[in-house]
Length: 482
Ligand SMILES: Nc1ncnc2c1ncn2[C@@H]1O[C@H](COP(=O)(O)OP(=O)(O)OP(=O)(O)O)[C@@H](O)[C@H]1O
Image: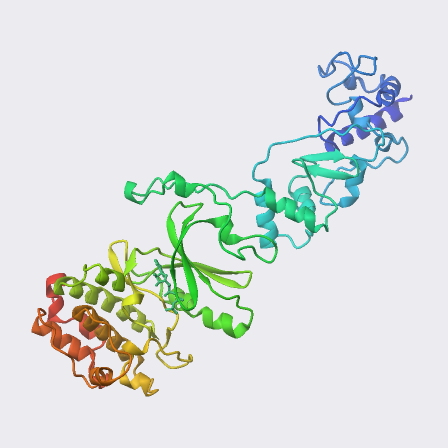
């Protein structure tokens, strides 16, 4: 062979090295190596001399030459790769499926697995598939090929395997199911910054196999399952179920609320999103149940929120809320929440003991599912009639912030009295006329304050801002001018 041919071969060999993974070795076609080595000996010494890669062993072919690195027969294991004229080596995998058959095209090729342990490759692959990060990618195979050119591929007859899973053909549902089965929820991480009392126990951190019905998204993947470990169901309302969960990344507990129904119509989605959008608009406040994020999955709405311990109805039932002092504390904190809500131009419209939570050392207003704008630009859905003021019942929405004050007064009245409020009848009417029963054991200023808050005339009720200045809170704030 003359020099130019040798140079050409060297260039081709270096291309092969770029294109083909190491260790894809077979010893079945060493004739090609031998002939090439003989031919190229004069100009491609690096292939056989001084490189230190060549090693003599007793190979199966009896020849005894198995070369384990660059220049070995492994780079020439198929006739495809030794085509001498206008040879087209695949340097760029770039997700092109055209490259794939070449790996398995030799009839005599011994299947040999090249595995690189990549524990997260499926999770990453599926995650990015969900998020549609690359619109050019139409299958997990292509995704892997783009992200890991030339890596982890295994020749196995007609198809190519990755980590033992045959990934082709691409349009196979069974293949996707197999892929899905291989995805294991990661274990929840421990948050080292949490106090010991808030730590998630090892049992709670353990991955769980099953849970919510219909938890898998339309593309077979679940953000809920991926991001959260479900501990238990903690409550049900008319609209949703609420689960105690642990976030797998930050290791903290959260409440995740999932709609009962699949929300397919735009109108029902819009309605369901009221709570999310109201909470997002208001922002974080110590006395408002904190909203973190929300998403749709299989047409169910999921809302990630701060986890609370209990609500006021439960506290009252446990006898922990009977003292005036503790009720004034509740009133002070929820009035602060209402002050923020009203300042943001919103009304809650469903203030009641069930929707006031205790968690992280504070009382918090929650369930903003009926929140609306004070300016009346959003359709109003009335809340629980037991706490509804007379003007709301008469469809007068001109003082919506005062409707919240009435509902908070009614809430405090109910908790103080220890009896459920009527939803109709004489007593129901009396309360809307400002006729409150005496509350034995409670101070006069406290009772008068509740009477003010439940004044039949909305305009005469104090605003949240007025309330915060009331002298009854002096012990809490150390100030107050009334
Ligand atoms: N952030 C939270 N932390 C702890 N428990 C919660 C939380 N949010 C809700 N819950 C529990 O889940 C139950 C149902 O929640 P919620 O009342 O908000 O459901 P809903 O269907 O949206 O409301 P509604 O029935 O009032 O329309 C509550 O009664 C409460 O026990």
